[in-house]
Amino acid sequence: MMRSIKKWLILSLLAGILLGGWLVFYAISPLKLRPSSQEIEIQPKSGLKNIANQLVAQGVLKEPWRFILIAKLLHKESFLQAGSYTLNKNVSPYQLLLSLNHGKTTQGGVTFIEGRTFAQMREKLSNNDAVKQTITGLSEAEILKLLGSEYSVAEGLFFPDTFYFDRNTADTVMLKRSYDAMQIKLAKAWATRDEDLPYKNSYQALIMASIVEKETGKPSERPMIAGVFINRLRLGMRLQTDPTVIYGMGAQYNGNIRKKDLLKDTPYNTYTRDGLPPSPIAMPGAAAIDAVLHPEHTKALYFVGKGDGSHAFSDNLEAHNRAVVKYQLKK
Image (cartoon, rainbow, N blue to C red; front, side):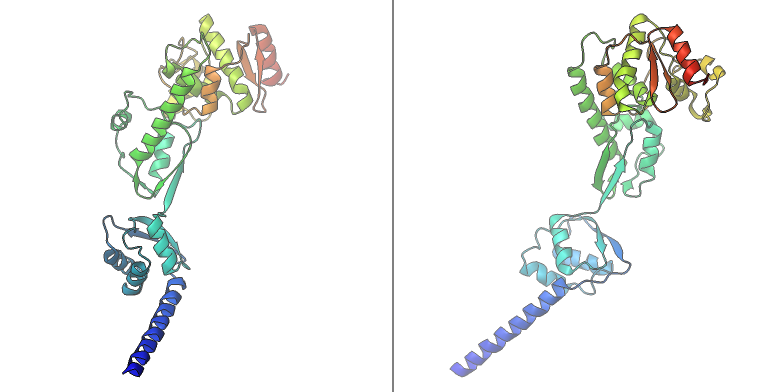
């Protein structure tokens, strides 16, 4: 009797070792998926058995029970998370289990760039296949209402940055993150602004920041550019900045700005109208916002491009005209 029990125990032990070894081999062996990478989707509120069957249906597993068994043995069945995942062809069942356990879902990313418009921002979102499209056909005012904004014009209200997200995240979620980031940045910058700036509120500072953003790509010049425009505002001079004219031209702008364009009145033509335009003209970055709230203390009232990305600044019209001849007319 004892011999039979001993023999049975030995056989059971050997069977357990073989089963364990076989499961370990299965768990660490590459699944060899085709194609070389594969997108999968695990539905919300799915249990272990349901997840395993989804993996079979999507061609990841040949059958579900071995995956179920190793998940149970490792006590992972209660922690598997729904979402979109990208699998490489050599992922093993164990690595797959860890990914599902830690929620390492596929992330998308979108970068909003300084100086771009809200229309370009919308286009970037609509062209991103990881983003769920929900705002197609909606007006700016309708979109802002969805975001809980008090504004009706969207230009300039969003912070330029790179935002990462799980696949199939709605475009409104990405816009909200960028919108909130701008409101936080602007509020903090406004609270620490220099004294006696000619802005009625932080929105006017945002408008000025968008102009500075478009006027120069040279970071070191932004406080100086801001200083010139602030001097003009204080003296009641028109800003006379081409980027606002271009923005007001809209689709009519073909890459060239002519004298007749400078004379044609629009709400954004700062050659024909006093003060700031009615809204930002682009998405300003943090450096432009800081520049208009902490401008360079200067007497300059004019500037002209040198042709290398930098500008020559002048305190009076005579000096400015000389700079125009030197750098623009090349005389």
